Length: 220
Image (cartoon, rainbow, N blue to C red; front, side, top):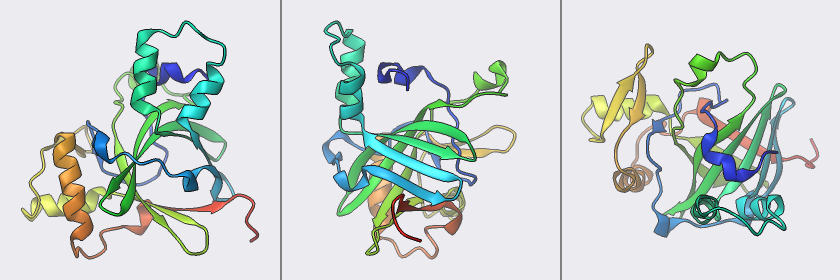
């Protein structure tokens, strides 16, 4: 794995085959960041899909062991992401790496996902330069059987709220497919999540953007 000090130099791609909500800014505020050891480990969501979740801090320290000449920018990155996870997601022999920042919305744990490295074979370089490093957000729902459900915020749910004028959140429609991209501030995004979790919106968590993580050593 390449040194994590290069996390900001890679191009965006997200491998979940569904319409998740994307944002130009993080969904979290620094004062709500909370690290949780329960996420650390190796997980699977199917025969060809695996997740390896590690501590950013521990991975960074291992990568930079004995390096006493870290540049100022490197240390700024470390301070920004020291409470995050490094997520290695592999599906159908394709792998990607994400930074996932854990944060609390009242009593609920969320992860702010940002990709920083992916397998880019076959992607035209000019196409790659059109892709942005956006954020997505997932609700972490711990289950009694030891599994973890990652529930991404679904684009159709947010689009309906906006069209029905039940939500005022800065956004843009971009690209040929008119993808929804939120442009609101992190403060506004966090405030939205607080209200969203308290709402009684029907089917607020679409099954197509839910991934159930099972421990890799769990018996079938």
